[in-house]
Amino acid sequence: MRRLWTPWRLEFVTGPRAAGCIFCEKVQQNTDRKNFILYRGAEAFVILNLYPYNNGHLMVVPYAHVGDLEKVEDTCLAEMMRLAKRSVATLRKVMNPNGFNLGFNLGKAAGAGIHEHLHLHIVPRWEGDTNFMPVLCETRIIPELLETTYDKLLAAGIADDDEKLTDQ
Image (cartoon, rainbow, N blue to C red):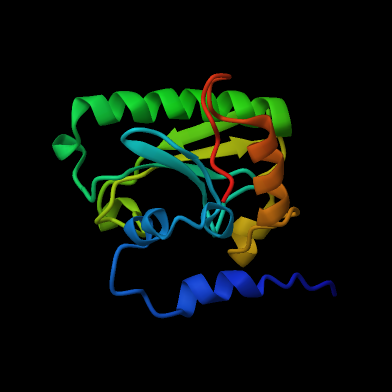
């Protein structure tokens, strides 16, 4: 019998929840490499998901601590969509996925793990990436370290050519 060890996932599943907002805290720390922040825009930022569904799982997050889609400013939503578009293009170039899932989980009932701060998931997908493991074992296989994915995506750049990416 083969075993797959994913100890980093256990921390998320069973660990205590921080008192504050993880998105607000990470963006204020200004340690982007440590926090896997790939890009900072005017009203939103792009960050790797620490507990990804697949390699390259990104999130576009507004700076404003808002959990309700209807309360997000239109300019922020427009920037989030521009960043999603750039993120998809970068993921396509770097990781060559066959497709993508993009979406918001609005509220706990919809599956939001962090329901108090809106965020848009961008999940690259490959043909055959859904197999028996998630169905039978409730386990995802993530073959690449977050640091490796971060470095590849940072080097490729989410920003336009005239914009600077973060690298702190």
